[in-house]
Length: 159
Image 1 (cartoon, rainbow, N blue to C red):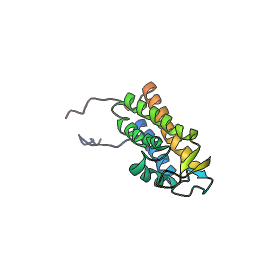
Image 2 (image 1 turned 60 degrees about the vertical axis):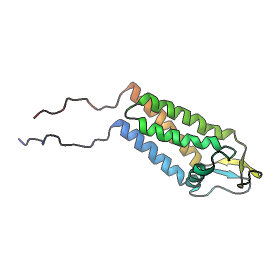
Image 3 (image 1 turned 30 degrees about the horizontal axis):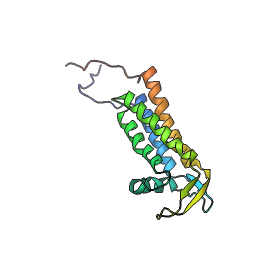
Image 4 (image 1 turned 180 degrees about the vertical axis):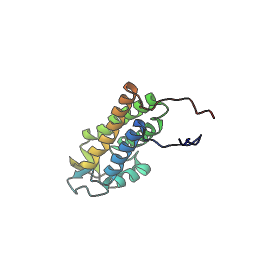
Protein backbone atom coordinates (compact mmCIF):
# COMPACT_ATOMS: atom_id res chain seq x y z
CA UNK A 1 0.00 0.00 0.00
CA UNK A 2 1.34 3.43 -0.97
CA UNK A 3 1.38 6.13 1.68
CA UNK A 4 0.22 9.57 0.62
CA UNK A 5 2.76 12.30 1.30
CA UNK A 6 1.97 14.47 4.29
CA UNK A 7 1.16 18.09 3.62
CA UNK A 8 0.11 17.18 0.09
CA UNK A 9 -2.41 19.67 -1.22
CA UNK A 10 -5.20 18.44 -3.45
CA UNK A 11 -7.30 21.05 -5.13
CA UNK A 12 -10.99 20.35 -4.97
CA UNK A 13 -13.80 22.32 -6.49
CA UNK A 14 -15.92 23.15 -3.48
CA UNK A 15 -19.47 24.36 -3.79
CA UNK A 16 -18.39 27.89 -2.82
CA UNK A 17 -15.71 27.94 -5.52
CA UNK A 18 -18.16 26.63 -8.10
CA UNK A 19 -20.69 29.34 -7.22
CA UNK A 20 -18.04 32.07 -7.40
CA UNK A 21 -16.50 30.85 -10.68
CA UNK A 22 -19.91 30.35 -12.29
CA UNK A 23 -20.99 33.88 -11.32
CA UNK A 24 -17.69 35.35 -12.56
CA UNK A 25 -18.01 33.41 -15.83
CA UNK A 26 -21.53 34.72 -16.47
CA UNK A 27 -20.37 38.24 -15.55
CA UNK A 28 -17.47 38.06 -18.03
CA UNK A 29 -19.79 36.71 -20.72
CA UNK A 30 -22.17 39.62 -20.04
CA UNK A 31 -19.34 42.05 -20.80
CA UNK A 32 -19.12 40.65 -24.32
CA UNK A 33 -22.82 41.12 -25.09
CA UNK A 34 -24.93 44.16 -25.97
CA UNK A 35 -26.62 45.62 -22.88
CA UNK A 36 -29.30 48.01 -24.11
CA UNK A 37 -30.60 49.78 -27.20
CA UNK A 38 -31.44 53.45 -27.48
CA UNK A 39 -33.41 55.28 -30.13
CA UNK A 40 -30.16 56.50 -31.69
CA UNK A 41 -28.23 53.24 -31.75
CA UNK A 42 -28.43 49.56 -30.98
CA UNK A 43 -26.10 48.05 -28.41
CA UNK A 44 -23.17 46.19 -29.89
CA UNK A 45 -20.85 43.37 -28.94
CA UNK A 46 -18.60 44.36 -26.07
CA UNK A 47 -20.92 47.12 -24.90
CA UNK A 48 -20.82 45.72 -21.36
CA UNK A 49 -17.03 45.99 -21.17
CA UNK A 50 -17.20 49.56 -22.44
CA UNK A 51 -19.80 50.48 -19.84
CA UNK A 52 -17.75 48.85 -17.08
CA UNK A 53 -14.67 50.86 -18.05
CA UNK A 54 -16.61 54.09 -18.54
CA UNK A 55 -18.20 53.66 -15.14
CA UNK A 56 -14.77 53.64 -13.51
CA UNK A 57 -14.20 57.21 -14.68
CA UNK A 58 -17.56 58.93 -14.76
CA UNK A 59 -20.20 56.98 -12.85
CA UNK A 60 -21.11 60.15 -10.95
CA UNK A 61 -22.07 61.95 -14.16
CA UNK A 62 -24.11 59.34 -15.99
CA UNK A 63 -27.86 59.59 -15.49
CA UNK A 64 -28.05 56.00 -14.13
CA UNK A 65 -24.53 56.36 -12.69
CA UNK A 66 -25.07 54.89 -9.26
CA UNK A 67 -26.25 51.65 -10.89
CA UNK A 68 -22.62 51.09 -11.88
CA UNK A 69 -21.75 50.79 -8.17
CA UNK A 70 -23.39 47.35 -8.25
CA UNK A 71 -20.13 46.13 -9.85
CA UNK A 72 -17.81 46.76 -6.88
CA UNK A 73 -20.48 45.36 -4.56
CA UNK A 74 -20.56 42.19 -6.65
CA UNK A 75 -16.76 42.06 -6.46
CA UNK A 76 -16.93 42.28 -2.65
CA UNK A 77 -19.53 39.51 -2.67
CA UNK A 78 -17.10 37.28 -4.58
CA UNK A 79 -14.26 38.14 -2.20
CA UNK A 80 -16.20 37.49 1.01
CA UNK A 81 -17.89 34.28 -0.14
CA UNK A 82 -15.49 31.92 1.64
CA UNK A 83 -14.85 33.71 4.91
CA UNK A 84 -17.81 35.99 5.67
CA UNK A 85 -20.88 34.61 3.94
CA UNK A 86 -23.36 36.93 5.63
CA UNK A 87 -21.40 39.93 4.38
CA UNK A 88 -21.19 38.34 0.92
CA UNK A 89 -24.96 37.84 0.91
CA UNK A 90 -25.59 41.45 1.92
CA UNK A 91 -23.26 42.76 -0.80
CA UNK A 92 -24.93 40.60 -3.45
CA UNK A 93 -28.48 41.59 -2.43
CA UNK A 94 -27.65 45.31 -2.43
CA UNK A 95 -25.82 44.83 -5.74
CA UNK A 96 -28.90 43.21 -7.26
CA UNK A 97 -31.24 46.00 -6.19
CA UNK A 98 -28.86 48.64 -7.51
CA UNK A 99 -28.49 46.81 -10.83
CA UNK A 100 -32.25 46.27 -11.10
CA UNK A 101 -32.80 50.02 -10.72
CA UNK A 102 -31.55 50.41 -14.30
CA UNK A 103 -34.92 49.02 -15.42
CA UNK A 104 -36.55 52.22 -14.16
CA UNK A 105 -34.35 54.55 -16.18
CA UNK A 106 -36.04 55.78 -19.33
CA UNK A 107 -33.13 57.50 -21.05
CA UNK A 108 -29.33 57.44 -21.25
CA UNK A 109 -26.82 60.24 -21.77
CA UNK A 110 -25.42 60.28 -25.28
CA UNK A 111 -22.55 62.71 -24.78
CA UNK A 112 -20.17 63.90 -22.08
CA UNK A 113 -21.78 67.35 -21.74
CA UNK A 114 -24.72 65.87 -19.87
CA UNK A 115 -27.26 67.79 -21.90
CA UNK A 116 -28.23 65.22 -24.54
CA UNK A 117 -30.00 62.01 -23.70
CA UNK A 118 -31.91 59.47 -25.73
CA UNK A 119 -34.63 57.03 -24.64
CA UNK A 120 -33.69 53.44 -23.83
CA UNK A 121 -35.94 51.22 -25.93
CA UNK A 122 -34.74 47.70 -24.97
CA UNK A 123 -32.56 45.82 -22.51
CA UNK A 124 -30.34 43.23 -24.16
CA UNK A 125 -28.64 39.99 -23.12
CA UNK A 126 -25.64 41.67 -21.47
CA UNK A 127 -27.83 43.41 -18.91
CA UNK A 128 -29.84 40.28 -18.14
CA UNK A 129 -26.69 38.16 -17.81
CA UNK A 130 -25.26 40.75 -15.43
CA UNK A 131 -28.36 40.38 -13.26
CA UNK A 132 -28.10 36.59 -13.48
CA UNK A 133 -24.48 36.67 -12.28
CA UNK A 134 -25.62 38.64 -9.23
CA UNK A 135 -28.58 36.31 -8.63
CA UNK A 136 -26.21 33.33 -8.73
CA UNK A 137 -24.34 34.90 -5.82
CA UNK A 138 -27.54 35.57 -3.87
CA UNK A 139 -28.90 32.05 -4.27
CA UNK A 140 -25.44 30.55 -3.88
CA UNK A 141 -24.96 32.35 -0.57
CA UNK A 142 -28.39 31.21 0.62
CA UNK A 143 -27.63 27.64 -0.43
CA UNK A 144 -24.31 27.66 1.42
CA UNK A 145 -25.99 29.05 4.55
CA UNK A 146 -28.61 26.28 4.52
CA UNK A 147 -26.72 23.26 3.17
CA UNK A 148 -23.07 24.12 3.70
CA UNK A 149 -20.07 23.79 1.44
CA UNK A 150 -19.88 20.01 1.34
CA UNK A 151 -16.26 20.06 2.49
CA UNK A 152 -15.64 17.88 5.48
CA UNK A 153 -13.58 19.59 8.14
CA UNK A 154 -10.82 17.18 9.23
CA UNK A 155 -7.97 17.67 11.65
CA UNK A 156 -4.59 18.06 9.98
CA UNK A 157 -2.66 14.88 9.30
CA UNK A 158 -0.14 14.27 12.03
CA UNK A 159 2.97 12.37 10.94
